[in-house]
Image 1 (tube, each protein chain N blue to C red):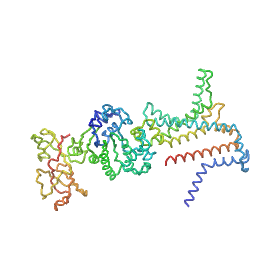
Image 2 (tube, rainbow over the protein chains, first blue to last red; image 1 turned 90 degrees about the vertical axis):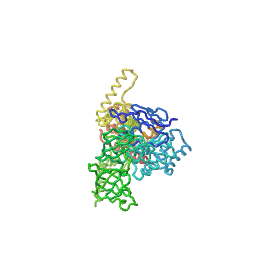
Image 3 (cartoon, each protein chain N blue to C red; image 1 turned 90 degrees about the horizontal axis):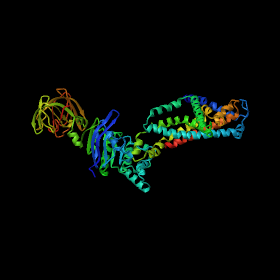
Image 4 (cartoon, rainbow over the protein chains, first blue to last red; image 1 turned 180 degrees about the horizontal axis):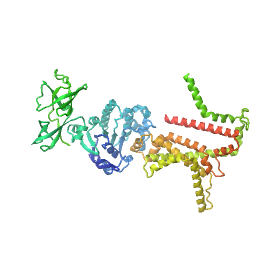
Amino acid sequence: MSEFVIEVKGATKTYGKNTVLHGVDLQVRRGEFLTLLGPSGCGKTTILRLLAGFETPTSGQVILDGKDVSHDPPEERHVNTVFQSYALFPHMTVFDNVAFGPRIQGVNGADLEGRVMEALRTVKLDSFAQRRPDQLSGGQQQRVAIARALVNKPLVLLLDESLSALDYKLRKAMQIELKQLQRQLGITFVFVTHDQEEALSMSDRVVVMNTGTIQQIGTPREVYETPANLFVAKFVGEINLLEASVAAVHGDGRYTIDIHGRRFELGARRSFAAQQAVNVLVRPEDLRIWRAGEPRAEDVAQTIEATVEEVIYKGSTVDLMVRLATGEALSATQFFNEDDPVFGNLDYKRGERVEVDWVPGWEVILPHD
Amino acid sequence: MQRYVNIAYATLVYAFLYFPIVILIVFSFNDSTYSLAWHGFTWRWYEKLADNDVLIEVALNSVTIGVLAASLATVLGTLGAVALYHYDFLGKRLVNGLVFVLIMSPEIVMGLSLLTLFVTVQKVAALISESLDASLGFISVLLSHVTFCTPFVIVTVLSRINGFDRHLIEAAKDLGASEFYTFRKVILPLLMPAVVAGWLLSFTLSMDDVIITQFVSGPDYELLPLRIYSMVKRGITPEVNALSAIMFVATLVIVAIAQALLKENKQ
């Protein structure tokens, strides 16, 4: 038995002159929660539809459990889908909806009853078996859709933007519930979303996509902390982008980077040439703001001057918009510090002159593009 | 005050729509052969109607054609609508457009073209064998009625099918259903109200068609509307009024049944 439950090999999909997938390679491990993340039109839903069998690849292969299923129809694939619209059969009760798959497999009688009720119990809807879908709330319909798919014990459960129709609070709750369900059942989940926060909080691995190609595959931490390119950096979370150039190369991944005339000694995983234009990327929460007279941390080496332009109180944090002398705007998330009675309450004034640096080592340097 | 104005207004609207039919029904109980004045209540015309074997036979013809044509048109139209929605095939757009052309085309043109077709078929049949009988009658009337009813069923069913979630069919297949199982368990039940409506529409269209039937019925086969038409040529008799009243009541009953069925389907 292969380590991978799904392998996509060089899958390309074209509609007429329009190519929506460019030779995608993807492996899904058994039992993992994999998320396809990207803006609309990036090809993530097309991949899901290739896996489900609603589309066939123009070229390339889809291998399910070691078998090439590229051209098998959906009814012959042992995967099930939870649709964005849920697609519950409106003329059937919740019970009949869930029983739809098993009945086709020839399950009936007490056996059927047992399996359907077990699936409904898994999603905590066993008391709703005789209701119609239109008598349920959005969240409950969502659960029925999940139960209807899970009852078939699929090799892989495919979820297409399944939470996007729910309101914010319910979505948060369902995220946790889905993750728990996946862990408890041990079924492989392939989840499609355009919501980066959702992707980070639920997945074992995230596949970041754009314009029909995979930009990066990694754990949520990897794609957030070490983005492979500018697209990933900008799409996953908020990020500040500083134009810079390589002033000197010291070997061993150490560089002197020139940011607006200030020299920073930084490390990078990639190799750069001297004089090369680069971007230094820093997350808002890693940016540090130093006010006049505020005692500096010991690791402050070099700073950039800036002016506070906007102060946004968020309850647990204060978000700042600061503008550099060169006109670039940066956003910084500052955390309250109860131990510091003078500066810990973050009472920044608009127009205040401050200095900016970041937690050393938390920056990412990428080639300019 | 406003309320009385509303009631008066509604009464006028209903009167405008239904007064002619009320007149017709009232006069079917009038105890006089020719007079348009009231001469007292009678069941006479209905009794006379019940004794008129020719008329009853013609009425049965109409019902037979109506039921058969509506049923055939409903099957064809439903399958056609599902095909137009679900599958891609050569000439799909053309078929889609032609459906509307059939609905819009003048009945007289359709009647004439069907007659031409049947006459041609007759000629060809005669060439092939002397014993082949393709004269106008039951078959030609039935085929014609199916032809003009089918587009109405297609349009009725298509409008409902376009309203539902495309993912429903995908969901069924995703859960392992074959094409036929999906059709039987998902598509057809969801389409049922439109299918019933299509059948009823076809039945009414078939029941009161005069123009096309007149072209294709031939000398030996007659339907009720044609019969009434020829009876009226010799003056409106209370007998015709009685017959029309029965037809009106029958229509009312059918509509009521349809409404009840559709309501039940919704729950």
